[in-house]
Length: 164
Image (tube, rainbow, N blue to C red; front, side):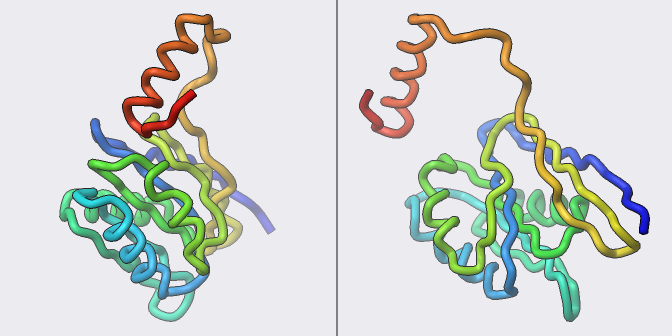
């Protein structure tokens, strides 16, 4: 048996975050939709899920057509069974991630980011692909200073109401 690796770039428009994960059942689409629509009032999102058996369709939902289309296209490019992609705007992944992880069909989260994202996919035979991992953002350039720490704490207070 041979294995071929593919690196799939996931476009992330300015002001948008993406969550890439794996689940195990067609009901995932409805359950993720419910979690996202009820977690953050005013959040915009699109989600898509690669069905791994049966009709093997890319199932999709959302309340924003642009984000739904981005999720569909990302799933089309990843093309691995049971993978889902959520594009999110007017909310942060931290606002929805625990709820997404608690959906009973969700097996794992590969990434939740607004950084440049690449998904590493392995193909073991035609029409059989799986996500091996992700490349999220860039390598570090150094260690934070005291000023950087203060900037981080200020940012966290602004976006999450988290107090340090």
